[in-house]
Image (cartoon, rainbow, N blue to C red; front, side):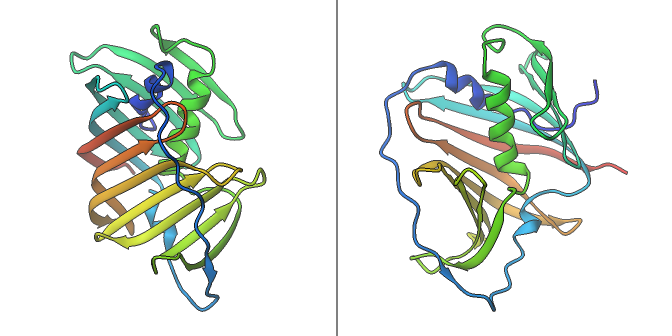
Length: 220
């Protein structure tokens, strides 16, 4: 299988119940029609392959380390989760329009809903959200591209935060769902590629992960 898109281990977190975390609510956005914020450069375009070392932590303090091998090719996603010893635990392919197929799933990665949740989370990190986009400033003065989906969910994309970017996703009820902080960005092929990505998941099951880039290759 051609590995296409990075399969994040934090979907294992959904299999473990953790203590709920206090969740922030969606901040107000002051629209500025003159502001030019190029949020598209947050999301890699074209054909990329990534290798990350991923350290994850659950709400109970447990955790582990795995390797993620990623290739991004347009809207399609293939993902694989691999142990440091080289054992493939999970593989799936996403073809857009909510269509996906699971090619390998070692328990507990074969549980119902796992693959769907996995695809939803990795799209939040690496694919531009679909919906109406407005540009303006948040209450703290940071410029943001805000995308509102048909179901009322919201994604805020913030540039120039610690010389990199952040993404915050909110549910349709306007509660914070995920916070993604990218650090040590470099520009390649007009895209901002971070050396480190830290993700915190909120809600009924809390988790966090740290993704450290090992390789990033643009494929012809």
